[in-house]
Image 1 (cartoon, rainbow over the protein chains, first blue to last red):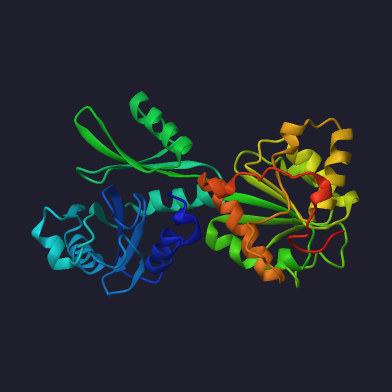
Image 2: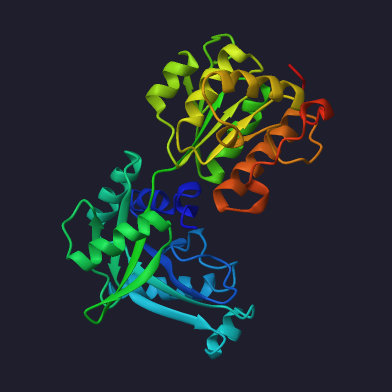
Amino acid sequence: MTDTTHSEDILATAAAWRAEGEKVAIATVVETWGSSPRPAGSRLAVTASGRLAGSVSGGCIEGAVADAAKQAMATGTPQLLDFGVSDERAWEVGLSCGGRVKVFVEPLS
Amino acid sequence: MKADILARLQAERAAQRAVVLLTRLSDGEQHLWPQEALPAGLAEAARAALGSEKADNVTLDGETWFVHPHNPPLRIIVVGAVHIAQAMAPMAAPLGFEMIVVDPRRAFATEERLPGVTLRTDWPDEAMAELKPDARSAVVTLTHDPKLDDPALDAALRSRAFYIGALGSRRTHAKRVARLKELGHEDDVLARIHAPVGLDIEAVTAPEIALSVMAEIVAARRGAALGQPRPQPAPEQGRISIGLSA
């Protein structure tokens, strides 16, 4: 289930963006419950300038994760985000499929 | 993630070595295993993750670690640089497979016909001895020529390849099974061969056959019932279901 990283090499994209002088953060699904769309290990790379590669959901929470990633790049501190039906934010950000995911967001330093 | 960890992780993956990235979720501290020595509990979790191919959380001494295995790509070893192989090639990488094509007929095995694929023009028995198919390998023979297909199947049957497929009608396969029996393979071993190769989607064109083969390989890899070899009916009932009879 983790071979997604082979077909889409998000880390290579992150490294290439950094080499171009971009500020980059990497978000990784670290835990899932229920019908969450992407397995643990799925990655999303985000730049401060707004570029995105990969995914940590079917598109439901990418916006919220990108916001957290920008914050992580600004502070230099990683964050553990929790999205789920028990969290009001899940409805806000659209994870209405009944799943729950934890996403770790870390700046590339 | 530190740039240094990212560079080392990418270098290990580029060298096709198994590597596990461990991340402490409280502060983002990271290690690579087996490249770094780790406490026994973490090393054991990393080893287990490579085996299960599943990323997961592990809590040790009150700290939660995300244990993320990165295995080398699965391989598809194809014998025969034929039209179906050409149609399989662009599907392989996005599905997570490295594709290797073996064909000593140099007119077929050209970079122009198979861009982005590892090509070998040695004989299949020599190629298989070097490639050493393992439990992360699929072997597919497509030449219809027993001189080329049989040695590859012989080697595949002696390996732990997770998938073995052979192009050809049921009648062709019955003759092939008889030849392989003479090489000492028992019925239960020969039953590992998927033949006619590919899921039965009434494929006609090369891209359709390629799709059916790739789908069957994915089914075998994921443990789906469709990925199990089908029992072979008696040869006289033979029906040409895929491709041409040899």
